[in-house]
Amino acid sequence: MDSDPDPAPASAAGPRDVPDLPDLPDLRDLTRDALRELVAGLGEPAYRGEQIFRWIWRRGARCFDEMTTLPKTLRERLGDVARISSPTIVRVDTSADGTRKMLLALDDGLCVEAVLIPSGERLTLCISSQVGCALACSFCATGTMGLTRQMRAGEIVSQILAAQELLLGPEEGRCADPHRRPVTSIVMMGMGEPLHNYDAVLAALGVLTDDMAFGYAPARITVSTVGLIPQMLALGEAIPVRLAVSLHAGDAETRRRLMPIDRRYPMADVLAACRRFPLKTRERITFEYTLLRGVNDREADAENLAAALDGLRCKVNLLAFNEYDGAPYERPDDEAVAAFAERLRARGVEAFVRTTRGRDIAAACGQLAARPDGAREPDASAASSV
Figure 1 (cartoon, helix red, strand yellow):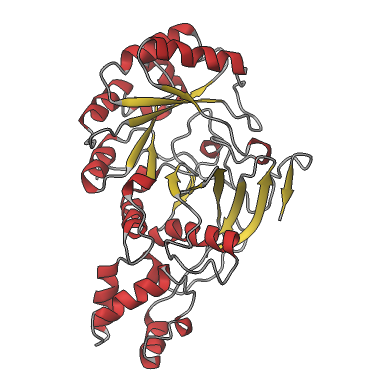
Figure 2 (tube, helix red, strand yellow):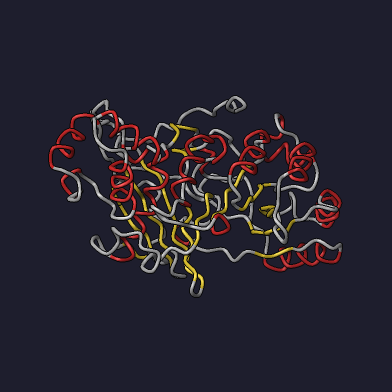
């Protein structure tokens, strides 16, 4: 893969005392094949690796003693050569619209956020892929954090187990039976740039779509990116998940002001790569566009965007900017958002206005910036904690 973007400075926010962790592999980071190899190296039949895989993801096992279908001797040996991590729910904030934001502590004490978004019979889980973000988009609170570290594959997937336990209770939630699984779709739009953590994200997608784990259809999973071109094209060849590209401007000059990554992967190159991205029949690329008052919400911006997207199989999701402390932009009013959408539609671009969810608890798009010390408390008048 292409080398990483230059990281922004790491955030100072984080645990003061990092716990000492055993220098052992985390079984949740291992693929099914890797688990088969692990147990084979211990002199056990390879199918034991698949049993362990099911225990980890279908049953949510947190320790080896829970894996009662394994011989006791194997469970004891596993305890000597491996570990199982599990994120801890530190806080849950509930929005007036039913959105719930989880603050999750990872095994080194660092925190990330994941968001549950209900919509009719659907329930979407927005998950994180990095602790912080290196890309410093100027309209995103996560970008102000800098990148602290990459999340491991097991940490990415474990956000779903945490959500299931929250929704169903500790016992019921520790089962990925599709008939009891409450989360209907996954979006990698939380903290971080997923394709900046490509290898771990690809491994996580493998678990999410594995029938021995969660068995999600790739069409139920959306991966968002600012347009890291080599990784984006590699993802398209590796697994047919849905792609969402953060565009946020109709011209290169404006995008470069908003998104520093445009200096490395210019808008024209990103759109050219989108034209090469493999799509199935009836599939489209989604372009995400955050409207900023007086910056990218004018009639000329809509004209430029429509021209840039001409001929692409796509749709545009429009979202009014969600404010956060210290943000340099303002949110446009609903009339301006609706007018922008109508201008795009008049020029043949399929455009949708996304309903902002969880804004009152800082859970909306662009607002995630986990603080382990709880410094970013939601507005108590508009949210409740459980």
